[in-house]
Structure formats: C-alpha cells, structure tokens
View: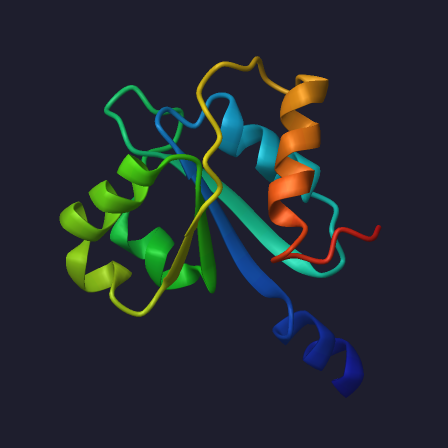
Length: 120
C-alpha cells in the first residue's frame, strides 16, 4: 500500500495554457488524460476561456506549458507571485488548428518530447 501512495505522490503535475482553453491546451490535456506519469489540467487566459487560469492552478502545477510567448509574458505579469517558482515552457504553437486535429497532435508530441515521457 505504501508503494501505491508513493507512486501517486510522484506523479508530475502538468498545466497546459493557451488563449481560450478550447483547442491547443485542451488537446494537450486530452493527450495525457490517461497518463500513468502525469496529472494534467488545461486553462486559458482570456475572459472567453472554457476554464480560466488562476493563481491556484499555478500553485498546483510542477510545470506549465504555454503555446505562445505572449502567454508566458501574460502569466508572469498577471500572476507574478504565483508564477515566480513555476517552470513555464513555451511550445511556440500557433492558433491555427482545430481540436484534436492530427497535425496539432503531431506538433504537440514533437515539441513536448524533450520535456515529457511520451511512452504509453
């Protein structure tokens, strides 16, 4: 039983962020939804977001992946204190895709491969 508790505690918490949390970050979250290695959430930065980013989300995350450089800048500006100890990595993925579009999945996997274990 102790081993199981340790395995659960060792899961890395990953937060994906884009503008509206409707396409890019949501697709990334869905890719990792059943991961044995990661707990994942996705959030958006705009008022029209499906789920809007909060300081609580940043406190939860071990690492944050943003889709564009301006997303990182906005997080560090709007949530200065909450973002101060969090690693924020920009994937440089444009807002030109549809949800779960194969090309989006391919580019997400390519850009995340240096940072996350993509094995199933």
